[in-house]
Length: 493
Ligand code: ADP
Ligand code: MG
Image (cartoon, rainbow, N blue to C red; front, side):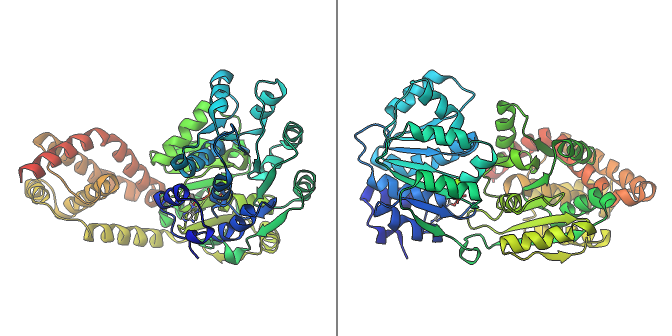
């Protein structure tokens, strides 16, 4: 099926095309016609299934654009408010619709001004309730959407929601979306929806059946080791490690930092500014490991998270669904990895039954397996690396000073760093940089020798990784000048 079949107006078709959407996702296919017919709707689908467009497109289609705020979307968190608002802006801008985002922690006046000019408002419950109760704004939307209703319930917003609805017109189309349907959500639905249609996307219809779910049975004292080894082995692009408690988040992040990993912690009592800063760093890839509690990761939407690790299995199935939904987004593949102690196996069974999913068990890879995997990853990368004339020069310079194994190791690492940064180019180096590299290579040799014997078990896992990432950080300065050199030499060539 194509988007054309919905007979959207031209401006909207243009926006869909600009967004790069080729065909509707299952929830969109089912929900859009019902919403266009004017029904209230209750939609159940996991994260990453495209719910925003499922309500956004048909609502925008029906908006006139000439009577103030026509659509009100209520979402649990500030991050979600921003995301949903961005997505709706994309769909609405070709028709000239304005979007306002409303959340706590910022000045009222600006927000109020924006609301007064907006056609679509995306708001978190707390601030929205404040504004309505203090009479600072009046809203008369024809469309009201509750997004991620179960998360709002979990976050204790039920009273706010009910109160907000007392300020809204009776005459309206109401849509409610939720990943799960606990009883209180069903009760709420009866109160705010009028004769709703329902749309449920079962697991087999989910766009992200692409999440592979694996569990590893470990003794409690092995958790840290197992986690680090799996991270080394799986080599995630970006990952989120879930802990049950803030205390665990703090402990694990200091431990992993000490082991040379670059991690960021995210928990509930962080300042909003700090939180946003951290999330931005994660999105940009400045940090590729997030350690978080369930609450802190609510609504976190980062498309390229390849792995979710459950340091402990969550207490309830709904948390499990939310957690693993942070990967396998937007049609990507994802892996959800859960560490369980033998006495938690029953919880696995229960979650499988609740969620209607299957987790397969696997054994923690041996150190040898980790090394083999890393070597083959590296070889694959090198195979794709162009050996540039300047790299050949470097080898010539170095061959008098270093043995071939060290040079190979050095080049491989440079190659890897460059690949990480800018594709596959080993670029021109000046005398200074070459000297610095030789120093590095020498230290390496020393490091390997000592590390190899002295530190035993730790070495091949935390040890190597630690050295690698420290070097990476230290070489930040060099990289810039090397890049500069490279650009120059390629223009000259
Ligand atoms: P949900 O609200 O169900 O978690 P989102 O609405 O946030 O999901 O959509 C997840 C991602 O998928 C977003 O990046 C969105 O732009 C993208 N997306 C949604 N619908 C489609 C589609 N039909 N084709 C391609 N990408 C889509
Ligand atoms: Mg959503």
